[in-house]
Length: 108
Length: 117
Image (cartoon, rainbow over all chains, first blue to last red):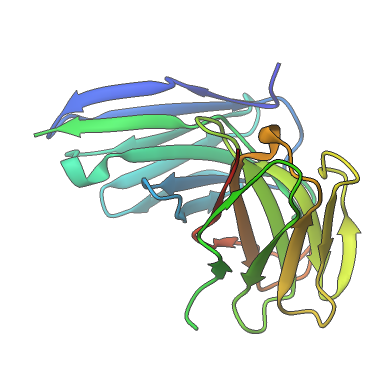
């Protein structure tokens, strides 16, 4: 069993829909990261959180430390949100351990 | 430059060749990480430097993989006698702070896509 599990692996939705991507982890962490990867490989950090909730534009990330679970939400989804979203955890503020990613496709 | 850069962006090697992949981190960033991402998978940790010191190389898959950061800035990942299973995207990331500091956002380079024929 992977230390970081994401669901779903693939998600297709229509423009405007509310999107939720889930992440569960099995190890103690210092922080949880949500990353976005577009075709071509570039990875961008969206959020780094260790408790509670963070919001940036249409993106919201939440974490429940007791349940070892985090969610990434996208409101009013748009085709430009299409990308792979990756959950990763850091232990001791060093290396990241990644989930396998969720491929999101938003159709117009 | 403004971000992490990697070169080459694409590399095709014949099985058995040696390759060298370069990473230029953001100026002043203390920590540097190398990750390997197989097709359709999430990245996996290879090795980590704090300045010029290689503090963790537990993710290097074999002794054919070697990384260095001699002056604490640019890093090179070398793969000797490449095999087909080495085909992947190799990602470099850097962070400003030391481990244990409160802010450790990792900034990623665009990656080098290695294809071994």
